[in-house]
Length: 223
Image 1 (cartoon, rainbow, N blue to C red):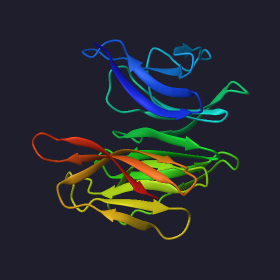
Image 2 (cartoon, helix red, strand yellow):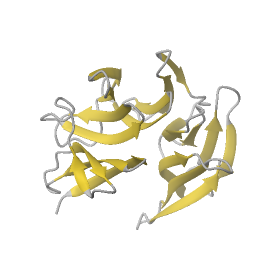
Image 3 (cartoon, helix red, strand yellow):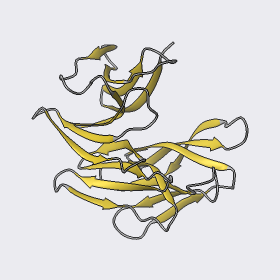
């Protein structure tokens, strides 16, 4: 059995990454037509002999990560534009560290950069201006961000050393960061997805019990 990494849907198209083998994975980006129930063709050059993973779609853009084959984390975050058939590298991993492509929405993309000591920082990139800003981090670790079309970033603020140690779900859009929820010790956050709703944004996130069984659940909170 293979493995699948699901990104967010855009209209009737969903981005995901899949590997035909679980024992020796090598991920490729795929686009799935939710109406036609079939894979859509991808331009040449997106998938290579390396791992392509963590895809996210928005309008004319596809955000994804690239890593050496069968490694756990990406070494580059790439942004592909369909209309111009061009790919740009947004960031490369620091020595001994890694990067994660997280989300693209409208004019914004977010990704995570982790140093070798697992001190991680979230960055927000504006497509139209080619400007990158680090999300506020008070000497802890920030990770698993998502972004909505107005540029609001939601992310986890936690410990670089311990699972579920004073972990908070945060919101930021250029000013002071706001804590939406502080989790009890022993509870960690995983991957997030922000959805623009008519009554306001909803953030879906993985809630992880740090105990021996590491139980996961999908939760939501109003943004």
